Amino acid sequence: MPELPEVETVMRGLAAVLQGRVIRRAELRRPDLRWHLPAGLAARLQGRVVLGFRRRGKYMLMRLAGGDSLLLHLGMSGRMVIGPAVVTTPHEHLVLETDDGTRVGFVDPRRFGSLDLVATAAEDAHPRLADLGPEPLDAAAFTPAVLSAALAGKRTPIKAALLDQRVVAGLGNIYVCEALFRAGISPRRLAASVAGARAARLVPAIRETLQAAIAAGGSSLRDYVQPSGELGYFQHTWAVYGREGEPCPDCPGPPACRGIVRITQAGRSTFYCPRRQR
DNA sequence: ACTGTTACCTGATTGC
DNA sequence: TGCAATCAGGTAACAG
Image (cartoon, rainbow, N blue to C red; front, side, top):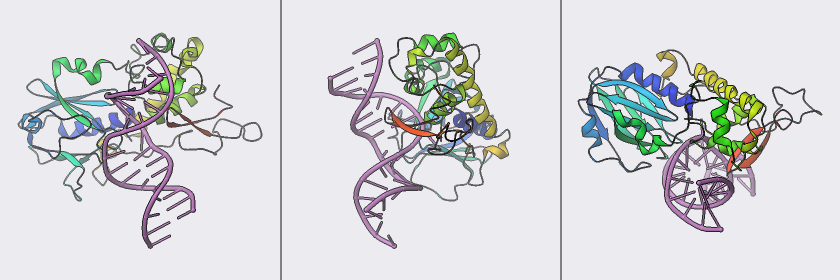
């Protein structure tokens, strides 16, 4: 689930229930997530007021009174669950309870997710954030010139380059496929050759792909919270991702176009239309 | 310094 | 039906 649009949606859902609340109780059930957690993390959360939230790439930052931020990454399988846990799972690693009785759980079976505490004033210096590329939704920071510069000299396929969080922050396997489709660029194309007019197409394609997904995520708390209490899950249909063998939505069909193809790049599945994407 | 591969985990799905 | 193999939205430690 969690690429930039999902993280953004989860974060908005968290903000809606946590902002301005006091964390009455925090319980860390296991410390061995992707990175070992700082000692006393739960105790340091207790009694704090939640001031607000920020997202950087696929990372969420929960800002707390007292000058600290809780850094949160959902990994591959991380979810945030609101409300009394109807079914408790052994994979609920962190539980927060607020002064108004709200209960928020961080559930992550695969434990590729992670948590950390960082001084709010030094958030961007955190090792996980320091090397991130520009925010793709920030039109001033993420421009064709910036993207071309980051891709210059790269000998990898553009698909792999866009998964590199140092090039641009927040894209994952699904949205890279979708954005390349929207831009009409082949995932196999050499990254360094994406410059000029192609970079000028790719930047807005990435932005529009992400914005459309965020819009599909909902605009109210009602949309954010599923009946299960899970935040940020939403039905979204992809143009190419997961559609091997299906017709390309932008092509006339056979014999001109034989539809969506799946290939493996850097060990991950890539979906694209070889006719439309060059 | 770059680039590709592998490992880290568990659960859902696929194939025999 | 049962069970093993395969695959999954991410990241980073490695090897070359």
